[in-house]
Amino acid sequence: MTALTHPAHSLLDRFDGFRVEVDAARERADIVLARPPLNVISMPAREQLRLVFESLDADPAVRVIVLRAEGEHFSSGGDIKGFLEASPEHVSRLAWNIAAPARCGKPVIAAARGYCFGVGFEISLACDFRIATDTTQYALPEQKLGQIPGSGGSARLQKMVGITRTKDIVMRSRRIPGRQAHDWGVATECVADAELEAATDRLVDELRAFSPLAQRTAKKLLNDTEDATLSVAIELEGHCYSRLRSSNDFREGVEAFHGKRRPNFNGT
Image (cartoon, rainbow, N blue to C red):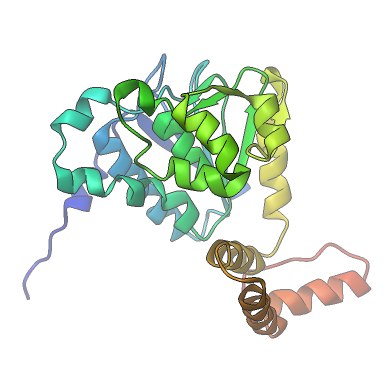
C-alpha cells in the first residue's frame, strides 16, 4: 500500500508565533497568539491556525475554544512583507484559512485587549463571541497600504453593522474602541481590562453547560441562514428543531427540567 503524505503534517510540527493549550478538565482549548509585543500573524501561521481549529473541532475532549493573546495587544495584524512574497495562489486562500473559527462546530471566543487590527480583527469577526476591554481598538487599516481587507473583514463587518459604518471603518481606516464596538453589536461584551480573563472564564463555563449537539446545530443554522430569506430560514430552523427533538440531549433536558435538576448532556 502506498504511504500518503500531506503538507499539513509538517505544518503542525511547530507553530509560528502562537501556542495551543488544552485543559481537558475544563473541556477548553486556548489558542494563544505569542509573538509580543504586537503578535503579528505570519503567512504560515494563517494556515496553521486553520489546521489547529480543524484539529480541535475533532477533539472530543474540547467543548469550547478561546482565541487570545499574550501581552497588551491582541494583534497589530499580518506580516506586511509576507503579502509581497506570497504567491497569488497562496493569497487566494487567506479568507478560507481565517474563516476556520466560523466553520468550526464548537463555540469560539475571541478575547482581545489593545490593538486588534487587520487579520487580527478579521479572525475575531469569524469567531462566535468577541470580548473586548476598555483598551481594545478594532481596525481594518489596509487602505493605508493601498489595499483592502482580504480575509473576509469588510464582508463580515458589513453584515454586522451595515454599509455606512463599514465604509467609515474600511475606507477611512478608522479605529473603533471596545465600548463603541459593543454598542454597535461587534463585540459581545466589553469589560474593564483587568476583567478580560475572568469574563472569558465565565463565558466558557456558561457555554459548557449546554448541549454540545444543540450548540453545533444552532451555530450551523445561524451561519447557514445569515443570507437566507425569512421563509427559508424558518423552514431550516424547523428541520433542525425536528432533528433535535429525537436526540438524547433533548430528552435529558426535558427530564432534568421536570426533575428540577441540572441536565447532564452528552452530545447525542
